[in-house]
Image (tube, rainbow, N blue to C red; front, side):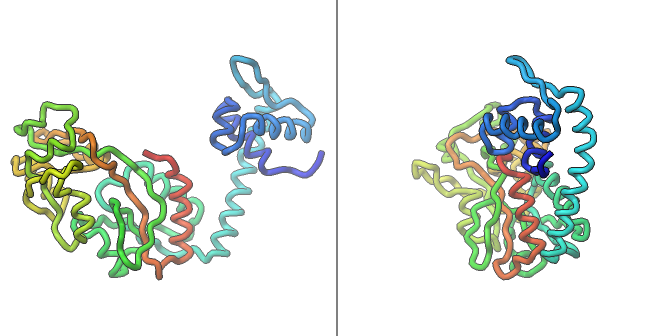
Length: 299
């Protein structure tokens, strides 16, 4: 048997999970024929057939099942050794302070868990950021990185992975005319006050969260401004205005006196990982890499 090829082992492990050559290729960013080549090469090295493939299904042979049971813990140990060596080389250690706005969702917490698994010497500390001050904690060096609603156009800040691209929703009072609807058009916002965000959030960011005009240019009435999400939802419940939110935030804040209606025609909301350009240490770079890998394609 020739030397072990890590790519062949990785391909076999993914195929054992998917039991589908096409999906395996998608996960590994290779063609289906390349998956077949890697599996055949591994079978040649081992000297036994590992996979049975028919027109209807893919399954592991008895030899494949035995090999999988032995390979999984060995591969996990190898990956851990590589991650430990990488962490030592990068100097990743100590606490990593992460700020976040609103609801970052379970997918992001999976990324946090994956980062901590890869770098056990670097514990994360999560801090909620005020709606009205998305960037202040970064500028004041109170957090090392932050998950914030886009856009980001701050001098001295770097934008990393972007994820959770979602439709926007309007939070409205149950007494509002929109409350019985599933969806409204962005142009309909011209007829109702829109709750805004107070300073110190920068003007361009406040405009993005509560636009002053519809896409066609019609003015949107100004409602009250708030500093926190809960303040905004309380004013919505009192029918003082409509508040735009991303879908995860709407889903995580059910209220009997508030309805959430999808808004058609607005740019989708998105979250981004941001850090200071002069504070991009090894831990921040490693965390950004993990978020990018884990959240790739996440909605």
